[in-house]
Amino acid sequence: MSTLKLETNWEEVKEKLKEANPYLSDEDLDYEPGEEQALLEHLAKKMERSVDHIKGWIESVSYNEGKAS
Image (cartoon, rainbow, N blue to C red; front, side, top):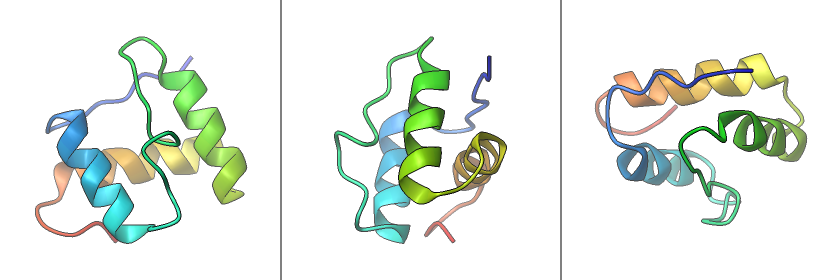
């Protein structure tokens, strides 16, 4: 099971993710504490990336100021 380590709140991270990837919807980024694995698996499938890649990407967005890359 993966646990996300976020530096900022989820709403701020979610907005940065949507800026970087406009095809991600609010439903795609629906997150409840304790349900990290479901979120990561959903995004990994949608974005055709590994769960580890998605986890690293979300955490890096959380730590960076400004726009997600």
